[in-house]
Image (spheres, rainbow, N blue to C red):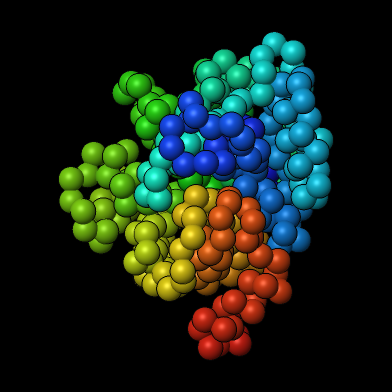
Length: 319
């Protein structure tokens, strides 16, 4: 196993017609989970990846389990519980520019995950742990499980990637912000966007370079600062700079950050330079937004290679 990730995946029901959900008569079912998106993206790139989670002993839980298995993600550390149902999310498209999301994940199956369920043997040969800021806020036991994974990753000299992936609906107190900042202090790669960095570190400036300098003065991790359609800044003691975003036709921005994380992780596994890793992340994010859905346009290695060659005109960028 090369990469481990931990998190909740929910069943998503999206109203087929625009307008208030109360009038909807049919729905499209899909699945949503930042960490499972990353796992699928990495699996598409032929990376051995394990997804740790807990699902309800129900039809939706088994559907998600089969879905992840079908994408060649290791699910040997996914548990089922009868204590609570699989998490659920409902989406309504009110108009072209407005989509409302309703979560039904409080006290979900994943919220009952416990650190004693984590199998240390999984960490012995793995190289990278990927976590997000969603997981530790779902329950106290989810936070403790996240910290146990971090402990084991450090014990076995794995690198830790942290994407804060902030969901404001999950944050109700300063204690929760403190938990996220605790994770920042444990990670090797910190990958916020500009707004997340401002929020977590109480930065008033909107200048990415000022934000990057502030982060670099407070944390030891390699910093990857995403600035939307403009591009990505990066900083480590050995290397720093900026990589412009690729200009593509955006269809659906959801899942772009997860694809970016997968590109970063993939390149890091293959000893890519920090600049080249950010380039891969930008490319993966760009490809993800070109189609509707979180995973529908995630590339294989060959597809990513062709995209980079076509966009950059450089046949060496993938090496």
